[in-house]
Image (cartoon, rainbow, N blue to C red; front, side):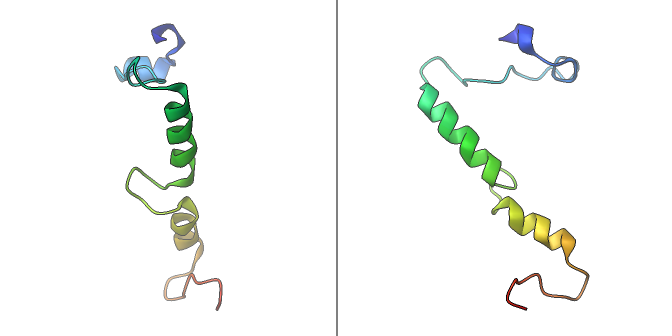
Length: 66
């Protein structure tokens, strides 16, 4: 998989993407990938919560009910 590294990942000496180890199932990798698309970070909330924070003017509520 190292041959599929982007130039930026090579420059940063990043580990190749994909399975963390051979024992991890393809389904577990897929499930983790889908989950990470919905989160703002490894421990963060739904990504839309973060996005809505930056779309709201200071002093205004970001609640959709307002």
